[in-house]
Amino acid sequence: MSRSELAAVLSRLPKVDQVLADPVLADSGWRRTVIKRLVGKALTALRDRVRAGDQPQIPDATGLAASVRATLDDWSRPRPRPVVNATGVLLHTNLGRAVLSAAARKAMTDAAGPCDLEVELDSGRRGSRFTALQPLLRTVMQTEDAHVVNNNAAALLLACTVLGPPGGVVLSLGQMVEIGDGFRVTTMAGAGGCKVVGVGSTNRTHPKDYEAALRGEAPGCDGTAASAILWAHRSNFEQTGFVREVELPALAQLARTHQVPLIADLGSGSLGGNLPDTEPTIIEYLEQGADLVLCSGDKLMGGPQSGIIAGRADLVHRCRRHPMARALRPDKTTLAALHATVAAHAREGRRGLPLYEQFGASIDELRARAEAIAETMEWSAATSIVESRATIGGGSLPGDTVPSIALRVPSVRPSRDARRLRTGEPAVVGRIEGDALLLDLRTIDPGQDEALVVALRALVR
Image (cartoon, rainbow, N blue to C red; front, top):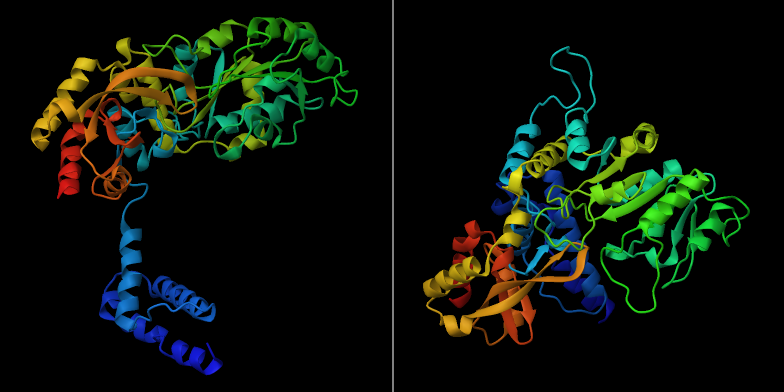
């Protein structure tokens, strides 16, 4: 394209003032500065495409205004938006992990306004945001003390930053786990300046490996003895074959001998219940000798995103009083939801916690729901209802699955229909298995069955 041709095309772009004056934007209710910035970005993108040799369709002022208004309307929708989780993964990290209980949601709403976050209503004096939650956590977790931060990575960061210097924390190479988005246990443990001393090998670590680090004789110690032992539960993968790991009670004995704290990163936050017995619990780790146990509130605990440091009162106090603790503290709505969640664990049956209710649903219950939906959709039960396997997910219980029932959506192009369901209203997220689009009933709240039917009717239309 010649310079003159380029100039001619660019001259056809609408002026900013013309776009701003269009009624569709003038009556939008958005601030002019916000709209102007969007219009400017849209025009810049068009100019760049033209100069790059593309031949985009040049909109008039009304067309560009409509495009900008569509963006503004999209921004007006509350985010994150709700979805129907039909994936068969109960704790789906990308879908927000644990579904909060009705009590937790109400607690968050109540705390959203003015609340007694840091005031003692009786005396009128300033208090701590953790005052109400700490006694409950201590009792349910059967621990001396507990502190809450905004996620488990923050708990790991804080504990290692406080207890790791000067010699660092010693960690088995077989426990150097990578978690979501490429982050690793070693990265988070060392992010505050704590040195991480890796010992053993990928598949086998022995007591002598830890002892060498605790004497300052292991590679990477630089002659300084490690100041703490870190144990990281392999919550998102398993090792089999020629493997050996020093178990937690043996590490606890080593820690006592060398007078260093033992930090156990459990991650999953299990408090027991009717979930599989293969996952260790916070209480078990404390009973096995861990001085501090770190865990998430939004995994097997079934609560909001949060991290908990539980264990010896003196060590928890040191973590709580470190300046980093203020940067990592949770907000009032998180504390309210966590309080309601832990309170549910203190009651018989853990009633009201969606994770436990979904996991505990019987095959007969799931099949009955599937049959009702298939009948409403006028689908053949023989072809549209299939046996499935659901999983806990969320970096918990790797390899563990539970029988389930799924709807097989009649579809010629499953990938296309899966996308249409995801982008519909309501949004439904299923999974592609082989050549089928499946909607797993175990991860769908029964109260969402009607919404699922609405989405499916829109799909078949």
